[in-house]
Image 1: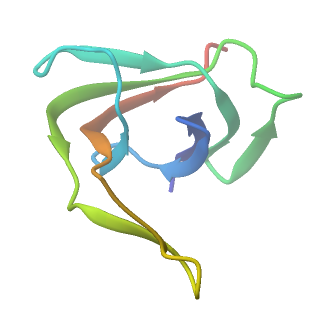
Image 2: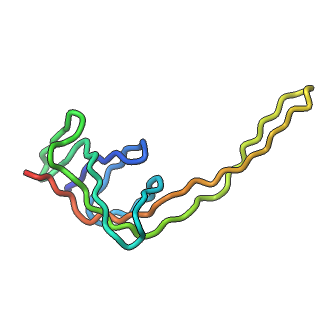
Image 3: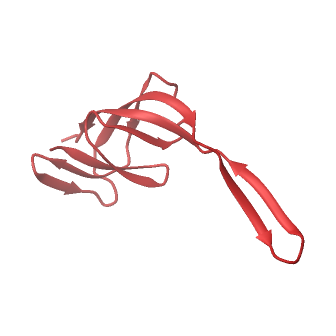
Amino acid sequence: MDYAIVKTGGKQYRVSPGDVLDVELLDVEAGTTTELDDVLAVSRDGQMRFGAPNVDGAKVVAEVQSHYKDKKIIVYKYKAKTRYRRKKGHRQNYTRIQIQSIETGG
C-alpha cells in the first residue's frame, strides 16, 4: 500500500490516493486542485523514504471539495469568589480535500 506522511496546518497526516480528509483552512477555491509540498515520508512498494525534513521532489496532489466551519465550542473562564466570568465561542474553519495522487519526483 502506497502512502505518504504530509504536514499541513501544523499537523501531520498519513494519506493514500482516494482518501478524504479535513485539514485546517487552505486558501484555495473549492473544486480546484492543490499541491501539498511538505512531504515528510513516502512509502512505495514497501520501501520507505524519509526526508530531512522533506522528501526531495515529492508532492501530494489533492482536490479541494469544500470549505466549512466546525461545531461551536464554548470557552468559559471562571474564578471563584471574584465575580470573574468570561464566555467566548469559537468555530474552526476546515477544508475537505480528496487525495488524487502521490508523486515522488524520482
